[in-house]
Image 1 (cartoon, rainbow, N blue to C red):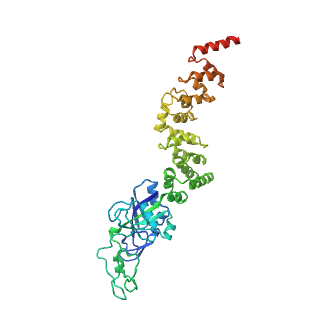
Image 2 (spheres, rainbow, N blue to C red):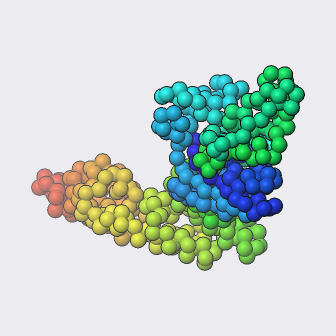
Image 3 (cartoon, rainbow, N blue to C red):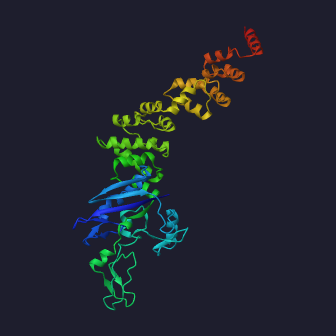
Length: 434
């Protein structure tokens, strides 16, 4: 999966104080007022290194956002790139595929109208800074400032080709091949105007998740969101579990609650296997327990499964969280006499924290017959099966002879549902014995 954002970056020139629009991900850009170089990567470094934009969208669920930068800001919107020809949004996956098939080209054709869209893969220094970044689209594609100046070759005096975008200040003459360095006024005039403010970045979502899991400097709030909501890759996730186990074992008043909070976020993520969550046993923590207990959106099936985890305190807080779930309350209401699927009935029967519900479920007259027969072979439920109004004569006869408990055998034998022939045979056996 790909994550695509439209980006606008504005920075302040340190020399003259003017606002500078960086309409691309070059390391530096030039101030339109004084031609001074303005560093772009220096301002964007943390955001690029920690994949802030795609994480805010993929994990935080945001569709747009604003990121303060030193002396400026970055604004972004989660949207596909727009074709400059037909104005229709273009699938970034198709653009990526087209670019990879011809990586030497600086543009790809719109699938609908064949208009050119500027596209490039990150340079090696940018790739080291932001490894999850796949494509940069639409950099400096719009018109330069109105009345852009002309320039002539310093040798043959013929006009230089300055068709936008002009990315290098040294321009080769098409007539004689001379390298011409543009003067300040010409170079500033060729920079994009206000219409060229935005461009697009495309990220690999799987790479973003994998990097974020091992990013020790990731903000704790965003990390908790990641652990709770994201479809996490299993290989780095196992490493995270191991790291949480190590940190929870350390005698550190700050590390332990953080490790427990992260584990609880994983516990709430229904995409994470319960067995993997259960492999981490945090120490007791009142703060972490209160955090989990306050989760009213804890998925019912997750809470039920985690009740079996060998934790020091998970049982109480999982039960407390479970009791607030409407789905669980509805299930508990149907336990005694309501219609239950086999899966729901089994789920209720294996809850040690609510033995009353388990017993009521075993006595439910609407239980599937196959499940009732299975329960009759389990010592724990034989009495409840005998007392179930839907118990069959066959099950009663079987329990009257093979039930483990003598009391259950007597109850089964004395059940009024037995036909008269059963009583006659029983009395005959008793008389013969006498």
